[in-house]
Each structure stands twice: as structure tokens, then as C-alpha cells.
Length: 524
Image (cartoon, rainbow, N blue to C red):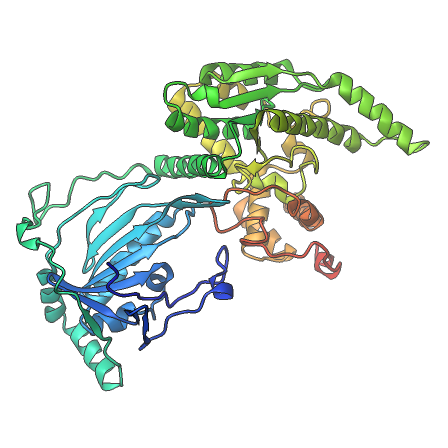
């Protein structure tokens, strides 16, 4: 039975949100009916207290509907959210809810959506907070429900005792604040008399409950891994278009992390035989080392993943000859030879995908993508980009963590070799670009903080005092040039999973044009 409808008031139209383009918003004092049901700015009186419904963004605004609804008698604010996962945001939510519950002297029950749609990951979880005191915090990355009993008489008592809140309410009333009407729902019986008084499980009203939070490093790594595994799994299940995952393993860091994330999902989907859900391929060229082959083969064996070695050497020579024929007297460039290898591998992965219904996972990271250290038609290709929103330093951080926690020999072998694409002899990524910590710092300062090249140099000098200022300046110039010239590549990349506010996807964060004026580069 529908007792009433309360529309969302705050419609976010920023970052990943576009609600203002499509929906109309609720307003203070809105009072309509829809099919005989109240629709608008309403409270609901039950036998246990007064409920104030909200939707997602309403709670994030200090000027949201909670204030007037609390002043109008609302005791229990119920917020239904679909707030996407972002790194470190869980603590922000917890703190925000505690602040709102304390400021407005209410009890808040908050529930978030769980699952993934396209590239957005919703981590679920929920809170109950009574007047600033935490009552309940639920697990994330899984469906389910949890209950807790609260005494709303306590909320009313604290509200009465709080003279600041009472004075603020009086000011609101005298300044013309209009009371929110209440829908009588007392005919709905909740049988609350059967509930026991809420006493602390650890049997003390004065001592805090035992600390159950994970160490910061563990929490960060597990959150990222859980979020990406959820994103991969929901994409796989909800599209209903694929039968298994396919990964081109290079023996490097990015494809290794992608494999481990897919396997993390597979352990939940097929706990008896997770490896049967994944097919890995190692496609060596003349520049592939025995070290990377051993690493790829080792981790595939440890995970129980099907593994094939399919050489591209013959195809590489054939494509070089064809390209040279098309060029005539113009010599084939070294970068073209590198890209040919990447494109052969991508073509083979697509052919495999088409024939067996495999989900071809793209394995590139955000840092190298930002400067175009990737090949259109090659390693930039795939059906779903798993770690395209993960900076390179975070990729390495996660692998260090996974090596410590799993003990996989394959991870150790990958980490023992300098990162590089092996498309040429002795190729090392940091030598061709810059040290990855500096690359990630450049990306954050320029793309995230919108600093100019000169401002970036100043910031990097303070951040990396051991590096010569002239060299740092060279890194900045190189980064800005590559960054601007690589935008055309980003727009051709596959759908990617989103885990942070800073993203190369133009629908989510950096809404940059492909064609830009040269004036922006002059400062470099």
C-alpha cells in the first residue's frame, strides 16, 4: 500500500550526475496528489513517531529539506540513496550523517544502493544515527538487510534539552517558516510494543564498543578491490551477453591486477571452480622476455585459470611488411612497430570474444592513459576497462598488498621486473615517461586541481625536493604536452569502472574538448 510520495528536491547535475537534465524537483510546500495519493512535501505520522522521507542528495545539502521537516516535528529521517562508490567516501558519509543528525536533532536511517550499472559502482551499506550517536553501520558490497531498535523518545528528549535547537526553531517560525503537513498513518500498526529496549551489545553505556575498523591500508585496498570486483561482476551478469572473461596477460602489473580482480569476482560466482570463468592468453613477440612469460604462467596456474601461449611473431613480421608496402619509400617508424604488436593482440582477443562469447577485459591504468601511453586499436581496446580509473602508483600499491596477503609467487615475479610494455628491447615505462609518482602528481595537479604548468612546477619542487628543479620542469612540460595531445585517445576508450572523482571519462569528470587552442600550451 502506498501511503504517500515525497519527491527528491536536490537534483545533482555535476560529475557523474545529470538529474537536472531529466527530472523535475520537489519544492518546499508542494502539495499535490497522484492517483489519490498525497504527493509533495509531507511528513508521515505512525504509531511510533513522525517519519521524514528523503532521497539521496537531499541529505548532502546544508539547506536541504531535513531542517524544515525536523522543525515541523519529523523525528525519523529515512534517506534512500544511490550514491556511487568513491575512494575514501565511506568515512565522509558517516561523518555527514552524524553531523546532520546532531544539527537537526533527529534519528537518521540511511540505506544506499548496491551493485553496478555501466561504469558506476554502488557500494551499498547503511547507517542509523540518533542525534549524532552512531547506532548501526551495515556491511557494504552485498545485498541484505539489518535491523536495530531505537527509542525515539530519546530523540524528542534531546531535542527538548537542546536550547540552541529550540531557539533556532523559534527563529525559523517567527521568520515565516511554514510547517510541513503530516499524513496520518496511525492506522498502520507496527507492533512496536513487542520490541525490547535498545541496550548496547557490549553491555556498557559509558564505554565505547570494541573497535572493529580495519587498518587504513587494509581498508583502502579492500575497498578498491571489492568495488572493482563488484563492477566487473555486475557488468558480466547484467548484460547477459558473455559466458566467461578473457584477459591478455603480458606478465606486467596492469594485466595482473585486472586478472586478480576478475578472479575475486569469480570466487564469489563460482566458489567451487573460479578459474573456469577466466581464459588468459600470453601472446609473445620478439621483444617478450622469458621473465614475463614465467610470471604470467605462474599466476595463471596459482589461480587455476586456463592459460594459452599464442605467439604473434609471424603475424608481426607479416604486418610490418604490409605496412612498409603501403608506405613505399617512407621508412616504418619504431612507434609503428610497437603499435602493430598491440593491435595484433587486440584483434586476436576480439576474434576469440566473438567466437566464444567472452568478455574481453581492457587492462590499462589511468596514469598512462592520461598521457597516451597506449595504442588505439591495441591495448586501449576491450569491452570493459577494469582499472582505467586507477592511477599507476595505486596499481603498484594494490599489488604489493595482494602479494603480502596472498603470497602468490606470480605476483612476486611480476613485481621483480621494472614496469614496461615490452614492445621494444629493454623498454621501461618510467624511462620513457617519468617516474610514476611524479606522473601521478602531475596528473592530479593539472587535471584535478587545474594548476597551470608554472604552478605545477612550484608544487612539485616542494613535493620532490630531491629532484632537480630543471628536471621537474621538464617533466611538467612533457606531461602537459602529452596530456593535451592524448584527449583524442580517451574518447575512443571502452567503458570503464569509476571509483574516484578524478576520471578521464568525459561523462564523469574531465569534460575537455578534443581540439584545443595552442594558447593553453604556451605557458609550458
